[in-house]
Amino acid sequence: MENQVHSIWSQLSGLLPVLLGYVSQFVLALIVLFVGWKVVNAVTRAMGRMMAASHIEPTLRGFLLSVVGLFLKALLLISVASMVGIATTSFVAVLGAAGLAVGMALQGSLANFAGGVLILLFSPFKVGDSITAGGSSGTVTSIEMFRTVLLDANNEIIYVPNGTLSNNIVVNSSESDRLLGSVSLLMDYNDDMDKARALLLGLLAQDEKVLKDPAASVSFLPKPANIQITLGFWSAPGDVSSLVAKYSEESIKVLQREGYRLGVTARPAA
Image (tube, rainbow, N blue to C red; front, top):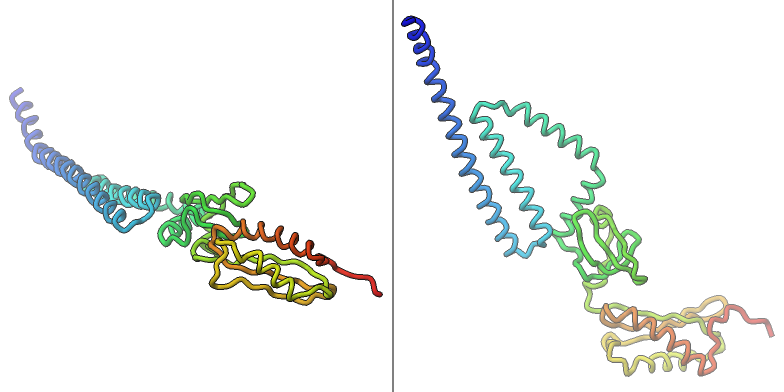
């Protein structure tokens, strides 16, 4: 009996250093995990303040902070796991292979996501701007991570993938302080061009929304059966559409009142 107790005690004495080693590693790993977690949170908060001071878009700021935080915490967990003797090589390999497979399956979505990051980062346009891109035109109502939402002139909502916007030409009409508006009509060759010029310029003379510099102009372009007359004027971007609609109607009325034959495509020979 005494020999058995002595044998058990000898075995426990041999295991004690091993157990103490594991306990110390486990405690150290817990300390590293606790301190590291606090450090990661402090780093992400500091990055958030720096991004806010740099006026980075809130949507992009939140996403970048989430990605950085998850990446740092994943590294921390892998480091802690290796400290307690867990093999992490296979885990990292499996995680990388899974990430590659997901990336291949979501190529289109990732392209739109990357486009959204670029748009939010470089701001080629912002909410409220009027843009034309990818065959669509409208006012930007929101910029999301995968798509941009436009509202067109017919009050229809258009969803444009960000990948399309980041890889194609985008015309931002709101970036300029003035835009050119034009109204074109067809008049007969026998009508008085100088009088037509004076009549059309007279329509704009008292309109405060029409800029005086550059001045409005009237040009004429010969056609096979008639003359194309174009009234051009400059105004603020937000006023162009309404002014074009207004003076398209007013131009027809004033010229018809003066006896001009508009839209004549052919006349019988005398």
